[in-house]
Length: 363
Image (cartoon, rainbow, N blue to C red; front, side, top):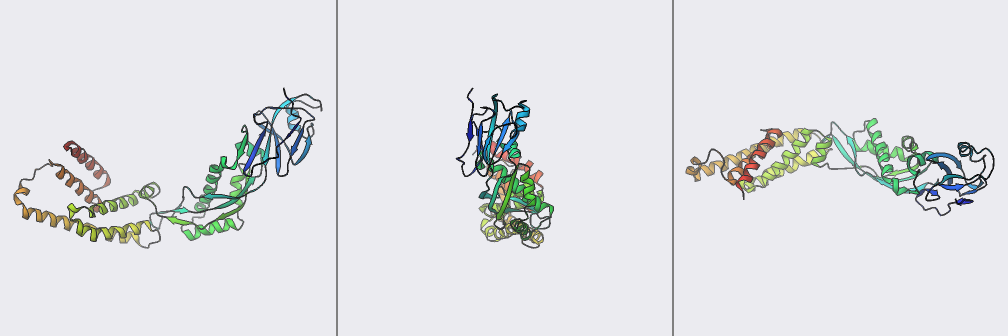
């Protein structure tokens, strides 16, 4: 047994939160041992994972008066020299300024009457953060750990920060980016009560909050499917299929690329731009025009083939026998889905059937 007569921790790293002495744990002390606590530090005695007495800045000689909880636990009611085992955690109480944060992943702001029904908000900024309640913080993160730095809990801090901002947007039914930025302005001007309520639960505090204005980034089709409605997703997927068809030379691609392709680009822009007014009406009108143009192209193409080779048309098999025949069916399915003639379930079943047939026919 090696009795620790003097314990301190003076070399504190800039982003250090806690430090245990001894580093391996289970130090042997006795009444009369000295604990030296630096400015902006608190020394917390712990035994078997239980947070007990705290000592503030200064030089302390251990006695039953300044560590009453530990003394009571060990039934040490005299100032004798009986050794006892404990851990001492030095907690850094300094504020850590200019800690960076950012919206990764983005904050989802729901806008039921605008665009695809939600926006992906992006921003970043800095906070000043520190430990407020030493024992509570140790219970949450520091107990049993030789040392803890801010990087060790940065993901937790980021998650709590973004969750709180998301709650603010939701509770106040924020539905546009200007109102969302007003929330950030309120937080910057000192309305940090909600943030501090959340961080107080883990023994921390936020003194300063700075953020750049929100910016909305376009949503991907997968994000539309996840956060929006299936109708939104099917509309965008249908437009993607139509765009592919417009570039397919087998469908009279030159005319399609000049006409339908331009229309599809306008439609996608309308869907992914939440600030565009009346996009649904424009989408429906452009879909009708796109459907009519593509059907006309198919009709013209089929008519030309029949005039050029009537005998081949008569001899066409009732069931597709070649890769070209099967591919033509698959292309036709894409157009039917894009035009709304069949639903997604029917498309998936038929597409799987003919894809399998295509594989059977080989290359």
